[in-house]
Length: 223
Image (cartoon, rainbow, N blue to C red; front, side, top):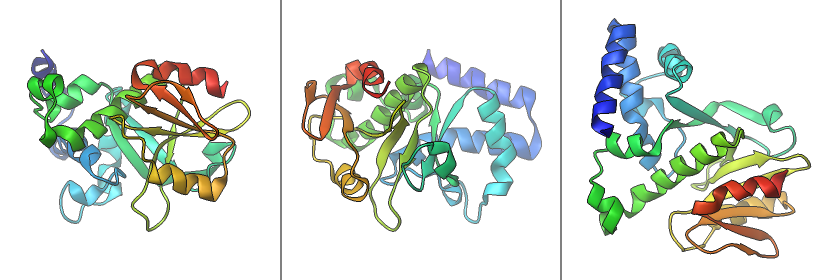
Protein backbone atom coordinates (compact mmCIF):
# COMPACT_ATOMS: atom_id res chain seq x y z
CA UNK A 1 0.00 0.00 0.00
CA UNK A 2 2.82 2.37 0.87
CA UNK A 3 4.55 1.65 -2.44
CA UNK A 4 1.28 2.30 -4.30
CA UNK A 5 0.99 5.67 -2.54
CA UNK A 6 4.58 6.54 -3.48
CA UNK A 7 3.88 5.60 -7.11
CA UNK A 8 0.79 7.83 -7.07
CA UNK A 9 2.87 10.71 -5.69
CA UNK A 10 5.42 10.27 -8.47
CA UNK A 11 2.67 10.31 -11.06
CA UNK A 12 1.33 13.53 -9.55
CA UNK A 13 4.79 15.07 -9.71
CA UNK A 14 4.80 14.49 -13.46
CA UNK A 15 1.20 15.73 -13.76
CA UNK A 16 1.81 19.08 -12.08
CA UNK A 17 5.45 19.80 -12.93
CA UNK A 18 7.72 19.25 -15.89
CA UNK A 19 11.26 19.51 -17.14
CA UNK A 20 13.96 20.66 -14.74
CA UNK A 21 11.47 21.35 -11.94
CA UNK A 22 10.13 17.80 -12.07
CA UNK A 23 13.64 16.36 -11.88
CA UNK A 24 14.47 18.52 -8.85
CA UNK A 25 11.22 17.66 -7.05
CA UNK A 26 11.91 13.95 -7.49
CA UNK A 27 15.52 14.35 -6.40
CA UNK A 28 14.55 16.21 -3.21
CA UNK A 29 11.76 13.82 -2.32
CA UNK A 30 13.83 10.68 -2.88
CA UNK A 31 16.78 12.09 -0.93
CA UNK A 32 14.89 12.33 2.38
CA UNK A 33 15.88 8.87 3.74
CA UNK A 34 19.59 9.38 2.97
CA UNK A 35 19.59 12.91 4.39
CA UNK A 36 17.98 11.68 7.64
CA UNK A 37 20.41 8.77 7.84
CA UNK A 38 23.40 11.12 8.16
CA UNK A 39 24.91 11.59 11.61
CA UNK A 40 24.50 15.34 11.22
CA UNK A 41 21.06 15.59 9.65
CA UNK A 42 21.38 19.16 8.37
CA UNK A 43 20.19 19.15 4.76
CA UNK A 44 23.13 19.22 2.35
CA UNK A 45 22.42 20.20 -1.26
CA UNK A 46 25.66 18.71 -2.57
CA UNK A 47 24.36 15.31 -1.42
CA UNK A 48 21.79 15.64 -4.23
CA UNK A 49 24.49 16.10 -6.84
CA UNK A 50 28.01 17.57 -6.85
CA UNK A 51 27.98 21.36 -7.02
CA UNK A 52 24.28 21.71 -6.25
CA UNK A 53 23.28 25.03 -4.65
CA UNK A 54 20.33 26.17 -2.59
CA UNK A 55 19.00 28.67 -5.13
CA UNK A 56 18.68 25.90 -7.75
CA UNK A 57 16.25 23.96 -5.55
CA UNK A 58 14.27 26.72 -3.82
CA UNK A 59 11.23 26.41 -6.11
CA UNK A 60 11.17 22.60 -5.92
CA UNK A 61 11.48 22.71 -2.14
CA UNK A 62 8.63 25.21 -1.88
CA UNK A 63 6.55 23.08 -4.25
CA UNK A 64 6.83 20.06 -1.93
CA UNK A 65 6.17 22.24 1.10
CA UNK A 66 3.04 23.75 -0.45
CA UNK A 67 1.83 20.24 -1.29
CA UNK A 68 2.13 19.31 2.40
CA UNK A 69 4.61 16.53 1.70
CA UNK A 70 7.62 17.78 3.63
CA UNK A 71 8.41 19.40 6.96
CA UNK A 72 11.41 21.70 7.34
CA UNK A 73 12.92 22.09 10.80
CA UNK A 74 15.29 25.07 10.92
CA UNK A 75 18.25 25.45 13.21
CA UNK A 76 18.57 28.14 15.87
CA UNK A 77 21.85 29.84 16.69
CA UNK A 78 20.81 30.53 20.29
CA UNK A 79 17.90 28.83 22.06
CA UNK A 80 16.25 31.95 23.46
CA UNK A 81 12.73 33.34 23.26
CA UNK A 82 11.40 33.96 20.73
CA UNK A 83 13.08 31.14 18.83
CA UNK A 84 11.97 32.61 15.52
CA UNK A 85 14.29 35.56 16.11
CA UNK A 86 17.31 33.23 16.18
CA UNK A 87 16.35 31.07 13.20
CA UNK A 88 19.15 30.05 10.83
CA UNK A 89 17.45 30.04 7.44
CA UNK A 90 20.31 28.31 5.67
CA UNK A 91 20.39 25.41 8.13
CA UNK A 92 17.46 23.02 8.17
CA UNK A 93 16.55 19.36 8.39
CA UNK A 94 14.10 17.89 5.90
CA UNK A 95 11.43 15.37 6.92
CA UNK A 96 8.54 13.80 5.05
CA UNK A 97 4.96 14.04 6.31
CA UNK A 98 4.64 10.35 7.24
CA UNK A 99 7.01 7.92 8.95
CA UNK A 100 5.59 4.87 7.17
CA UNK A 101 6.24 6.42 3.79
CA UNK A 102 9.81 7.28 4.79
CA UNK A 103 10.40 3.60 5.59
CA UNK A 104 8.86 2.62 2.25
CA UNK A 105 10.86 5.28 0.43
CA UNK A 106 14.00 3.72 1.93
CA UNK A 107 12.83 0.22 0.84
CA UNK A 108 13.08 -0.95 4.44
CA UNK A 109 11.76 -4.53 4.81
CA UNK A 110 8.89 -4.99 7.25
CA UNK A 111 10.83 -7.74 9.03
CA UNK A 112 13.52 -5.26 10.05
CA UNK A 113 10.88 -3.13 11.75
CA UNK A 114 9.01 -5.99 13.40
CA UNK A 115 11.88 -8.24 14.45
CA UNK A 116 14.78 -5.86 14.78
CA UNK A 117 18.09 -6.06 12.97
CA UNK A 118 21.59 -4.95 13.96
CA UNK A 119 22.14 -3.48 10.49
CA UNK A 120 18.96 -1.42 10.87
CA UNK A 121 20.00 0.17 14.18
CA UNK A 122 21.33 3.45 12.78
CA UNK A 123 18.38 4.19 10.49
CA UNK A 124 16.03 3.46 13.38
CA UNK A 125 17.17 6.79 14.81
CA UNK A 126 16.09 8.57 11.61
CA UNK A 127 12.64 6.97 11.77
CA UNK A 128 12.36 7.89 15.44
CA UNK A 129 13.06 11.54 14.66
CA UNK A 130 10.51 11.45 11.85
CA UNK A 131 7.89 9.97 14.20
CA UNK A 132 8.56 12.52 16.96
CA UNK A 133 8.43 15.40 14.48
CA UNK A 134 5.03 14.19 13.25
CA UNK A 135 3.71 14.01 16.81
CA UNK A 136 4.97 17.50 17.65
CA UNK A 137 3.47 18.90 14.45
CA UNK A 138 0.14 17.21 15.20
CA UNK A 139 0.15 19.01 18.56
CA UNK A 140 0.50 22.34 16.77
CA UNK A 141 4.16 22.83 17.66
CA UNK A 142 6.78 24.31 15.33
CA UNK A 143 10.08 22.83 16.53
CA UNK A 144 13.58 23.99 15.72
CA UNK A 145 16.89 22.17 16.30
CA UNK A 146 20.27 23.13 17.68
CA UNK A 147 23.75 22.02 16.61
CA UNK A 148 26.97 23.63 17.87
CA UNK A 149 29.47 24.95 15.33
CA UNK A 150 32.23 22.58 14.27
CA UNK A 151 30.96 19.84 16.61
CA UNK A 152 29.27 16.62 15.52
CA UNK A 153 26.45 16.95 18.00
CA UNK A 154 22.80 17.86 17.69
CA UNK A 155 19.75 18.33 19.88
CA UNK A 156 17.02 17.04 17.61
CA UNK A 157 14.28 19.46 18.65
CA UNK A 158 14.05 22.76 20.51
CA UNK A 159 10.56 23.76 21.61
CA UNK A 160 9.19 27.10 22.74
CA UNK A 161 6.74 27.03 25.62
CA UNK A 162 4.77 29.75 27.33
CA UNK A 163 7.56 30.61 29.75
CA UNK A 164 10.74 29.13 28.32
CA UNK A 165 12.64 27.09 25.75
CA UNK A 166 12.98 23.32 26.08
CA UNK A 167 15.50 21.03 24.35
CA UNK A 168 14.06 17.63 23.37
CA UNK A 169 16.32 14.72 22.51
CA UNK A 170 14.78 11.79 20.60
CA UNK A 171 16.37 8.37 21.10
CA UNK A 172 15.33 5.12 19.45
CA UNK A 173 16.36 2.72 22.23
CA UNK A 174 16.75 2.59 26.01
CA UNK A 175 20.34 3.86 25.87
CA UNK A 176 20.07 7.26 27.54
CA UNK A 177 23.62 8.53 27.02
CA UNK A 178 23.17 12.11 25.89
CA UNK A 179 26.41 13.86 24.84
CA UNK A 180 24.59 16.43 22.72
CA UNK A 181 22.10 17.21 25.47
CA UNK A 182 24.98 17.54 27.94
CA UNK A 183 26.69 20.00 25.59
CA UNK A 184 23.46 22.01 25.41
CA UNK A 185 23.13 22.01 29.21
CA UNK A 186 26.69 23.17 29.72
CA UNK A 187 26.23 26.09 27.31
CA UNK A 188 22.72 27.31 28.07
CA UNK A 189 21.79 25.95 31.53
CA UNK A 190 18.10 25.25 30.83
CA UNK A 191 15.78 24.77 33.80
CA UNK A 192 14.85 21.33 32.46
CA UNK A 193 15.67 19.16 29.44
CA UNK A 194 13.30 16.71 27.80
CA UNK A 195 14.12 13.31 26.36
CA UNK A 196 12.00 10.66 24.67
CA UNK A 197 13.02 7.04 24.23
CA UNK A 198 11.95 3.46 24.92
CA UNK A 199 12.64 4.02 28.62
CA UNK A 200 9.91 4.65 31.18
CA UNK A 201 8.54 8.01 32.31
CA UNK A 202 10.73 9.66 34.94
CA UNK A 203 11.39 13.17 36.23
CA UNK A 204 15.08 13.56 36.95
CA UNK A 205 16.67 16.60 38.52
CA UNK A 206 17.58 18.13 35.15
CA UNK A 207 16.13 15.72 32.55
CA UNK A 208 12.53 14.57 32.24
CA UNK A 209 12.08 11.32 30.29
CA UNK A 210 9.04 10.45 28.20
CA UNK A 211 8.30 7.12 26.49
CA UNK A 212 8.05 7.43 22.72
CA UNK A 213 4.49 6.13 22.80
CA UNK A 214 3.52 8.97 25.16
CA UNK A 215 5.40 11.78 23.45
CA UNK A 216 2.18 13.81 23.24
CA UNK A 217 2.32 14.35 27.00
CA UNK A 218 5.35 16.60 26.45
CA UNK A 219 2.81 19.31 25.68
CA UNK A 220 1.79 19.31 29.35
CA UNK A 221 5.40 20.12 30.32
CA UNK A 222 5.87 23.18 28.16
CA UNK A 223 2.46 24.86 28.40
